[in-house]
Amino acid sequence: SDCPTDNTDMQNWQKLLLAAAAAIWPQWATAQFSEPKNANPFVDMLIGDVVKTSNETILLDDEEFILVVDLFIFKPELQLEVFDGRMEGMKSLNRSTDAILTYSEESGSPVFSIATSLMLSNLTVKSGAKGQVGGFGFELTMPDIVLDVLVEAVDISTVIEVDIGDLSNIKPAVKDVQFRDVGHIDVEIIGLTPELDSLVSPISSLVVNTVKRDLQSLVTPLLKTMLTEVVKQNAPSDLSVLFG
Image 1 (cartoon, rainbow, N blue to C red):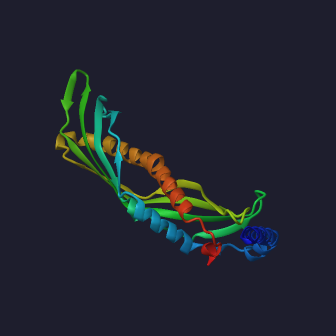
Image 2: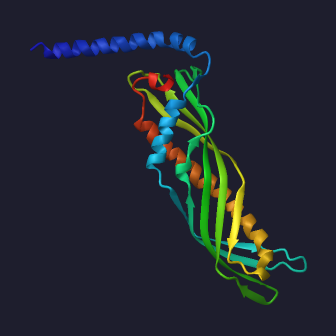
Image 3: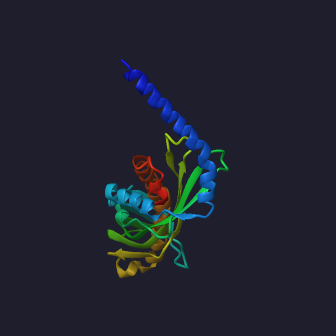
């Protein structure tokens, strides 16, 4: 019969302990975290989970482009269809800088921030393409070609925040994932006949630009979604997970 009272007492004790911890926490945290700390193990654990659950391949939409080819005397148009695009290399994700943990109460709530850079290495993009060159009364059908692209490295900055305003409900969130830079992009055009050499440069430029666009509009948001999911699943109930 005294079980309900025991439960209530226990709940009251828990509330009291949380209230006491919340009261002591800001002074302790400010003293403890006045200097940035290293959070590499926590971030490496998150990246490991992202790599495990990610698909290696992203399928790209078919697209059509119209390019003006500069042949000095005249400027024919190239209508290019790009199809069956596949981007591979998502599982190459790794941490490229130390993960730095800082503490702040500027927002009115005690918040840990973890800032780090991530890198994807040796991404490949392969697609088929076909097209027609036309203008000034003639039209030439181009042979089907393969676009084979190697992206040396993609640099992505991330910020994860852990709000500990309520110690009984610690809330981690992915605050920011930004495409920052891309390394060398090598484009190989397979199957283009020698008389169409003048198309190599405009097609290569187009491919470089569309790959950069896809890295920003597809890969970066996808990484943010996957990191968010993993961060939710790994919400630390014990703050020592963050800083060892």
